[in-house]
Length: 151
Image (cartoon, rainbow, N blue to C red):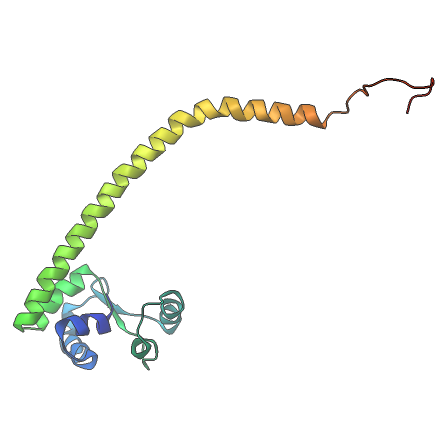
């Protein structure tokens, strides 16, 4: 999650959130929080239509927080609102993980069905290929001959 999104959820200015993180930077290793490069930020701006105009034209790329970084914010931001927001975000991450796991099961089922039916469709595809090969071969002319000359 980006710093400006979290600041909005925590009902604080982005600069204050960043200030608190910088004061406690030892709590945020690279796998908890990182700063986007200018190139990464430009790609995000290009691909995300839902970014506010204010967010798009910030002078510096945002901080990006992982799930663990968001959890660590609750120890840095000590307001009641920060605690409530962190609990809600952690629940959202848990639900997201459940959704991803459910989709993995669905993907496995689809793969097994494809494997099962691919074998059956191979015969159909082979028959179609054979028909195509036969169509490309020159055919014998058919019809009536008129006047003894054939064209």
